[in-house]
Length: 444
Ligand SMILES: Nc1nc2c(ncn2[C@@H]2O[C@H](COP(=O)(O)OP(=O)(O)O)[C@@H](O)[C@H]2O)c(=O)[nH]1
Ligand SMILES: [Mg+2]
Image 1: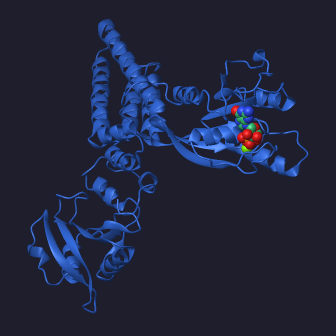
Image 2: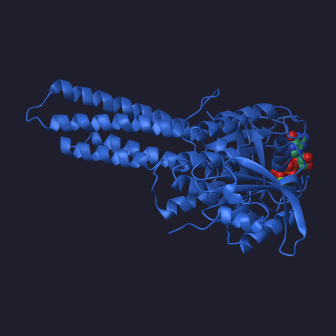
Image 3: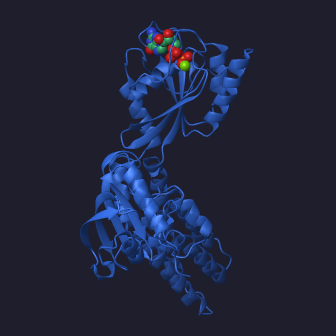
């Protein structure tokens, strides 16, 4: 079936210097001929620009635009494409897009240009995911990593690993062709498998630690009312986002805000006081909301008031969060200390939300917890989906070492290869493609 020709603004809505509208598909030239009938677009060479006046159906000029033409297969999507640059007015963009729709285009779905690039083998799936990471990168390291993926670092990693697994498979087939056991060959097989397992495990670990370069880490601030959670929240954001006051229960709702700490993005959550024993219905609702927020967090900042003796509520929180990843914080270090040291099972960081003392130390602790890998090490996987494929590959290869016989072992290695192939699978299910491309913008 001949694919539709799609159109979408590639620049964000709003007023700007310029805006770009993209077209892709087999009717691109036909649409251009209808849109700009004074030119003969079928004669226009690929990769050239033209400055033209664009008019509406009633011969009124909409704007002076620059049209770039890219012919298949030498384009981003692999299809005929045009990019129309106009003045950055939402009204002009809207008019041009409408005209394209009238002349036979359909509005592109989110990520559809990149999706077509994958289907036409212009990009591998992992490169397409890197495009998404690139657009969303908010820190240097995330950007660097995304560029590496876009240039094919993930694809090369998959290819190298695939050929190593194929060698393993061939070796097993060789062993299978003999009746007698070959001790030397068998040992070689074990060593090679063990080395591959170590390599995979290392990459998976790296990938897990890099996770927060591309998706924000969810970090919740927890503690009984009035210990200074909102004050700390504002400090970490370096702005007055949450209202603070000496009245317990000032924060009634969960407040979230995004900030960056070093190379990672953090979604910081200020919770209302946690008080499971309360009779106050509002606090009870808040407590329930806090419980929900906390259970899908990557890290907790558990705050105590250093100027007060231990309360029952503190003990409840301590017990409730025993098994969760956390940093203990003793706040109000500017006041006289009345909280006993031995109260906490592991060292805490003493800070003052009020004066800002030790807040940088807290930021470093956060970074250590969320990104234990130091330096600028980059890693070949950049998405949750890729990481899952690597884990599946690892499990299958691991299972192969416990196989009762060589034939089963060969089958396990096939499974490992299949899992690995998912990362760049050129033909994959609609569902997988939808999941990847739904987080793109329209026009990408
Ligand atoms: N002296 C001192 N007071 C603080 C500090 N942090 C917060 N407070 C005060 O403690 C009270 C409660 O703070 P708030 O951030 O609203 O606590 P929350 O209920 O845990 O969110 C306010 O009066 C703050 O000014 C601190 O580090 N030192
Ligand atoms: Mg508060």
